[in-house]
Amino acid sequence: MLEGPDRVGKSTQVEHLAQLLTQRGMSVLVSREPGGDALGEAIRTMVFAPNLDPWTELFLFLAGRARHLDEVIEPALTHGELVLLDRYTPSTLVYQGAELGDEVVVQLCSLPVFRTPDLTIILDRELPLVELEASDRFESSGLTGWHERRSRYLSLSHRFGWPTVSGEGSQDEVALRLLEVLTSMGIIE
Ligand code: TYD
Image (cartoon, rainbow, N blue to C red; front, side):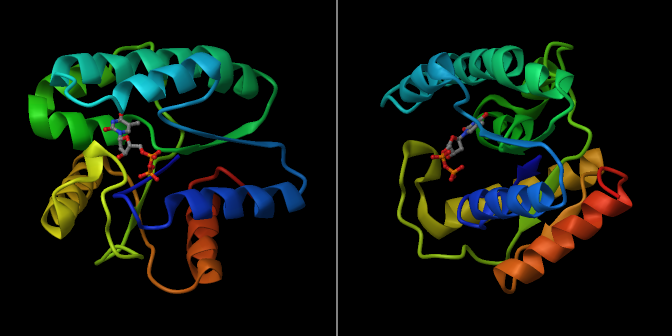
């Protein structure tokens, strides 16, 4: 699963990686959070509504995740597919944890219903790839907010031992680094 602050190229890399792995004959499913199936997309619309209180927001993200697991992720794994996710639990820890406190969010995200991925990679850059313009209320507060989120991702990667991959350089260079990590962690051969 690929994580990291907004505008570091996560979605592009997830798609790119899926293409490369499919070319190698693997069966790959790409999905994103919030989202997944139709109900997941409905929850996505709800979390982007203005003026949500932080607890409602947190539980909507978690409800979306439970649904996503049940409807999309677990069935794909059962069919032997490799699931590549664009955002998952680390986003909740970074975004909702900042508002509600880390430990309570860590505890809720650790409930057994929320399967732990085989591999979590943090894609990191020193600056966003493109100029920031807040596309939703989670990405407001400009470059200062972006740097705060980046440093939260980096400290979580330290705390949980998630590998960090540099998102600097060309798309192909970044993809190569990601493939190396997938190989060294035994996800692909
Ligand atoms: P999205 O449009 O998918 O953008 P991005 O390209 O940045 O992934 O936006 C998802 C937003 O939802 C993003 O700003 C992070 C936020 N989010 C949370 O706050 N908590 C979560 O648990 C998840 C999965 C996402």
